[in-house]
Length: 453
Length: 111
Ligand code: FES
Ligand code: FES
Ligand SMILES: [Fe+2]
Image (cartoon, rainbow over all chains, first blue to last red; front, side):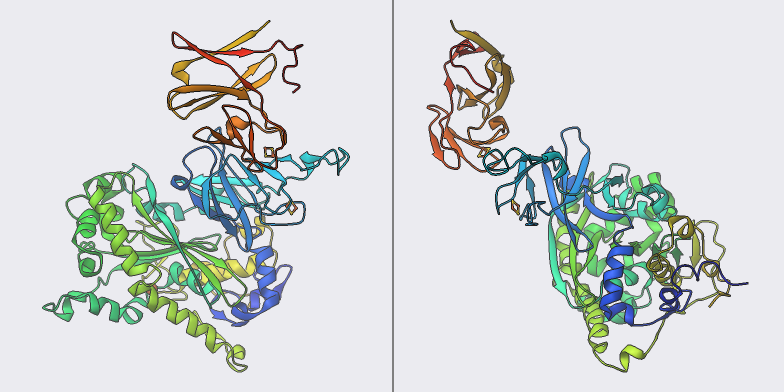
């Protein structure tokens, strides 16, 4: 019987990832046509992270961000709600607001002065009587509104697609794993102000996929950063990482995470993260988290990496937060933020700012390792032969585990189950599957062979 | 004859601007270093509320196209506005800020 989930309107998209996400055709990282289709089918339909609520606490506070390559303004309204609209003037298409963030009473286009209120209504057209003879319908010419806005744990998401499931359904089982970071103490979270932004020449999926599924690279790619962080008198054994852990693949919609789970807590990472943060996470300050989330999520899950499909990634505990904005098939803009629990002591917040900038900031010692890998993967794909050569994402195929303590599809910590989930969902979206189809779990996700490929 | 509009002084902390609807149209009243000023709330360039604007000393800047006015005299300090703002006398009577307005038929605000 053909697998109904690997066929659909466009079989070729599914083939690009080997049917079940386990074999990757590198065209998905370089091809212009695939990229344009991605902006439409993936970024035009998925829930996308826009801003953290703490960035825009008061009326008129706004951030300027992107949904894929579409610039949007995200603005707090008088009634506390959030509105987002395209940062594109309806007169001749100028960017309405050219600053990164701020507090606005209105937005005025600097080209010819069309002006919009904070909800994106066109409120003023210069020379409306004299030049337009009073004939322009201002209500019809506001910037295009993002039709759906929703929040989860103060993370504001937007979605262009009226047919998409609500945000809660979209996040699904991934919520349990997100709470390790976003609902640690029950007091809520906030961003340390300032977004670091940089551009690197690689496809956005290389980063998003790695954060979803790749614990495998850490002991190799990051070895030098770990060793460099050891004090002179330390033995290499002090850099010994926990061996137990798990990986989660969302049954639907492409999210993934992996982590260590060990009674050793964060101690193994004290040389990179510092005593203050490690004590906060697993030592004397961690009782509130254990009370709120239980022992497993409050203290034992460490080193976690996670992606909410498509391009919102984070490292719970380390509290680095990322958006991978696509900039053509061969480039992305990284937006990097640091999150802290609202009720964390000041010295903990300060330690996060310093340590995480050092590890994962623009020139962070771990960031360099990851960026170098992604950029080299991309450079290698300048070749002719390299573009004909498929890549392997088969690790752990058919070896999901029954672990009642974890929701969703679970496998060992070293696995590419979540990568396959990411690529398979990507391919199904690219194939134009409807949300009803996308909501059905593909057979291959449970370790069963994909009979259709 | 003169009409009076009034606001509670306690509603106007330092640096605040309030919009008051009156018979002669909306009026903005503000507190600059403990001194109170009132002026027509509608920018003379377009139909936009100056109480939404940025107040810096005695200068109000319209957020729509950045016209600036001196709120003491109503003088235009920066285009695209060209017509001055109407200003109104203000009196502080026992914690009540009274704004003296012209009667609507005596050349009050048109809007
Ligand atoms: S392009 Fe914005 S006013 Fe003309
Ligand atoms: S409406 Fe005030 S400057 Fe244009
Ligand atoms: Fe990494």
